[in-house]
Image 1 (cartoon, each protein chain N blue to C red):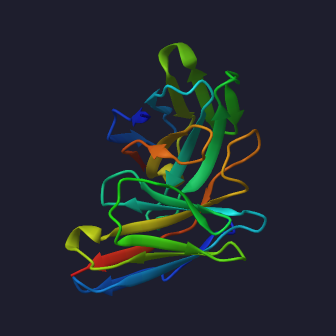
Image 2 (cartoon, chains in turn orange, yellow; image 1 turned 180 degrees about the vertical axis):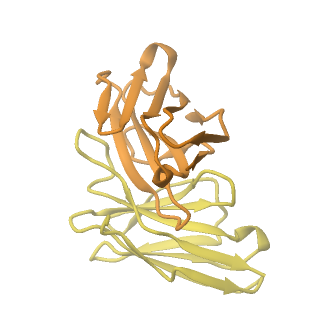
Length: 113
Length: 116
């Protein structure tokens, strides 16, 4: 069975601070895929990134960066110089080859002006 | 804009009633999955449809059923509604049901269901 743990439930930072959202996963699949989604109050899950298990390169997209470490089964997400618009719930998710996602419980990020 | 559209966006039903939620997948996507997200929780997989057939199901009772149409749009039907069915129902589409490089899963805005 697959499992995603997001141990942080709520994080509050002041604008311009850096913040890291943690994600730890469990799977028996040798090939798997990790995702991060952002959920604003409207409810839509906004796709941020997909990472394949065979590609351990870290990725940077603007103020967002992701650190994938297979050795510790972690896929952490860092927002640099946070902004109020980053306030949302962030979900880490995992799937094997069948595209059926297992989600963590989410992390509520509040960025204060 | 993900190209995945869901309707209705909000609805209120009475316990025991039936509800139908609809989803249009992104153009070129033939796989639709449904998820239930209770308040304060992560989404839970209900089932997936591919080529008009159910292609996997999560831990949900048979009163949760679905359909996929030739144009790949989909419906989620819930019979005999219970109070615990109150949740955000999310539809996700992907190009195929497998996950090779390049296949990404996109979600719609969801349907908020309240059962009273």
